[in-house]
Amino acid sequence: MKSNNKTIGILLIIGAIALLIPYTMLTIFFEYPDILRQDTGTVLTKFYQGGNSLVWTWFAFAITGIPLLPAYIMIGQKLEIKAPLVRMATTIGVIGLIVQMIGLLRWTFVVPVLADTFVHATDEATKVAAILSFKTIHQFGGVILGEHLGQLFTIAWTVMMTISFAKLKLMPKWVNWLGIISSVIYLLAQAELFATVLKGFPVWDMAGFIGSTLWLVWLIIVGVVFIKNGNQNVS
Image (cartoon, rainbow, N blue to C red; front, side, top):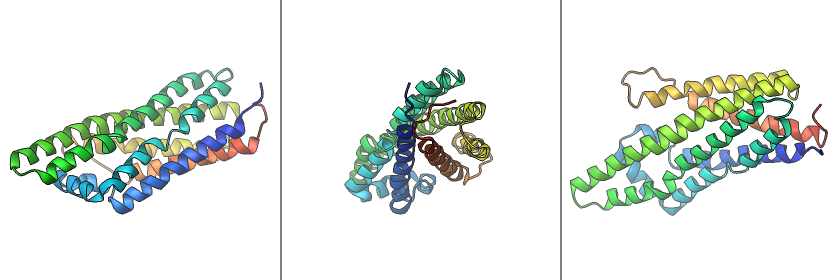
């Protein structure tokens, strides 16, 4: 069967770069992710002040990873016969992308309502209710789904794919090592999630940023290698 290396590579690169654009905008205009460490009232107020443009930026951040879905599936279909681990990796990877997308979409369809309620509240009880609602949806949609399950599944996909790439000798060794290193650092970011419920839990604040950035770089490099291979069949 004719290979689709080039298509896979293009989708991986587009998905990775597309994620970087809204993420960078959020760091500049919304102080993300540092703002999440601030008081909830401050978060809701700044979100409200961001207006519709901020809502659309979050929507873009949630959906720009969509090209990765067909890329994951196409890689799975291409390699699962030669590397059985890929089939499980594909399922885990797709689930990881979807739950992260669901978690991020709370900023588009839930947080705007809570921010508006908080800012326009005329009594303290309503403000408190908005704050508690935000904390609840953030812990569930953000911490549990997007960051915990989503990131863990993405890390698992990366490790399993790296092992498969090494077995099939599809990538240079340094690319495989980059995949492993980025996964380990990304995994350390889970400590920040446990710190939300376990006081004093040790946290490396830069783990999430460094791990996710290295992962996106790895993804782009993998895409470049697939394109370089062109329409050659996997040997």
